[in-house]
Length: 188
Length: 130
Image 1 (cartoon, rainbow over the protein chains, first blue to last red):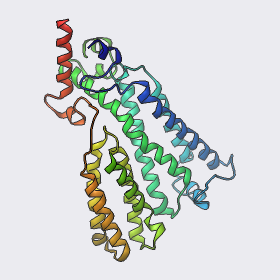
Image 2: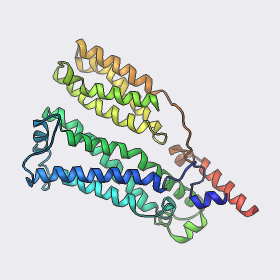
Image 3: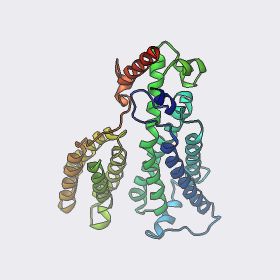
């Protein structure tokens, strides 16, 4: 009992999803994503004149200069880099009990990882269907996004369950979402 | 878990099939879309917290079986997609081992008396006894 409190394992769980050994791998992978997306942005902005692609050669150039890539005023890889950066930040903020002290950041983290994963899959689908080409680093980035989904959402589940317990005990969802002290102290 | 990892490989075959053999435009578009989706849900389902994502692949596996008839393509593409679809569907039914506990999982959010609330009650009882 004492031990469970110290390790901040949510009730009914066998481990703490907010522990650093659960979060550090996601943060590291997201950092790799920032690196790849930044590199692709630099090519799209022509800071680099060539792009590295050991497998598909012309494919990367075709995709990174496509209509979809130029749909927005900024290169699409820049959006990716920004999204990964949000993953890194929201993954790092808060201590090992953040599933209950900061549900808002945990849920923001889950939202950042989930939709980002979906956008990545959509881009993978667009590559061959619309342009008949593949791009090694784009595929790597998509793989990273997909790998992060499951490890990130377990923490979100712990936060949602905490909010459910708070609500059932008569607290407001709003206050439990922002981690008000009186809710955090009273609800296990 | 192993069933889902096998499904990742099946999804990879679905996705890369148009590059290996000559397929019609509609057949290769279908494989290019279905493959990454199967892979995505198989990756999520290979973790214990995401195991239920395998049910989405029951849907995509079934689609792969039906696609040749709905979209009208034949030959090698038809046979390959039916076989791959059968594999994906069957493997998606495998639940595998779940060792971790998640306070009742995602379904708990919609339950009247989920296990995490039970566990919290037991914990506070222990606390007042001490």
